[in-house]
Image (cartoon, rainbow, N blue to C red; front, side, top):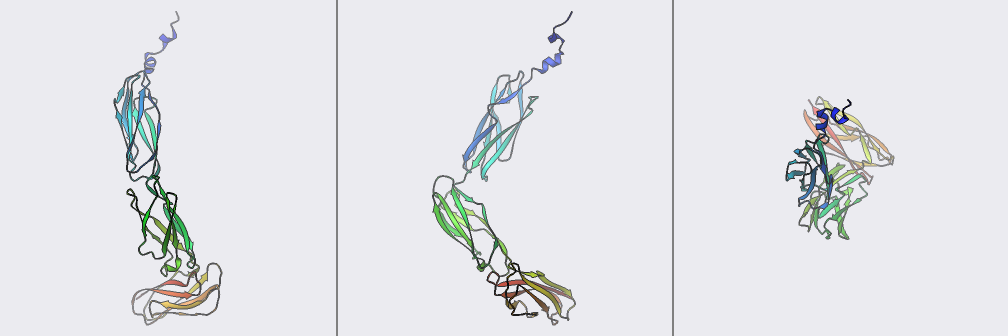
Length: 322
C-alpha cells in the first residue's frame, strides 16, 4: 500500500516549518532636519509573522544612538511590539546615518539591520568649514569667501571677528539674504620674514544663542619665488678655521632679480661673490669666520632682493665647532 506523501516526511522536517519570522513595518527612517541640541526618537514596529514564538535577544546600536524594545521581547505568532531608536545629534553636523542591529531567534534573519538618518542643522553653519590659501604671492593679496549659512530661517548677525597675531588677515562682511558672508584677505606683505606657511584660527562671534562663538581654520602657504640651494648651511668642524659653502639663489619662474644686500644675525657670518647683476640665478659663498669659538651656533642669514614677491629670503646657518 502506498502511504500519502505527507506521512512519509520525517517529523523533524514538519516541525521545522513551525518557526518564528521577524518582520518590520519599515527598515529605514529619515528624521529630516534636526537641531543639534534636541534628541529625536522613532519607533519601528516589529512583528512575528511565523508560527512559533519569536524572541528578540539583543539590540546593538551604532555610535550616537540608543535603542530599546518598547513592549514585549518575546512575541507569539501574529503579535507585534516596538523598537525605539533615540538619536542624540549633539556634536554632529550635516547628514548622519546610523544603524541598529536586531538579534532574534528567527532562523533566517538572526541579525536584522534597521537604519535611520538625520540632517543635523545648526542655527549658524560655516561653509566651507575652513579656508586654504595655496601658492600666495607675497606682493599680491589673495581673497577667499566664507559663508555663514542660516539654519533656522533667521538672519545671521556677525558681531565681531578677531585673529590675534595674524595681522596679515583682514575681512569685510556683507549680508546675502539670511546668510552672512565674510570676504577674507591674506596679505603676504604682512607675513613675517622667513615664514612661508602657517595656520590660524580666527574667532567669529554671532548673535545666535545656539552658536555664539565659532572658530574657523585658515591655512596658507606663500609661493617661494626665490629658492635657495641648499635650503640651509651647516658645518660640524674644528674651531679655529674658516668654514665656507656655496649657495645658489634661483628664481623659480626664471625671472631676473637683484640681490641688494644681506642681513646676518651674527658678525661671524659674511657673504662673498655678491654681484649687482640682474639675473635669474646667483651663486654666492657663505663664510663662517675662523674667529668663532668652540660651541653650537644657530644663526640666520637674510638676503635682500628687489623682487616684490620675495624681498627677503632667510637662510639658516648652523655650526657645531669642537
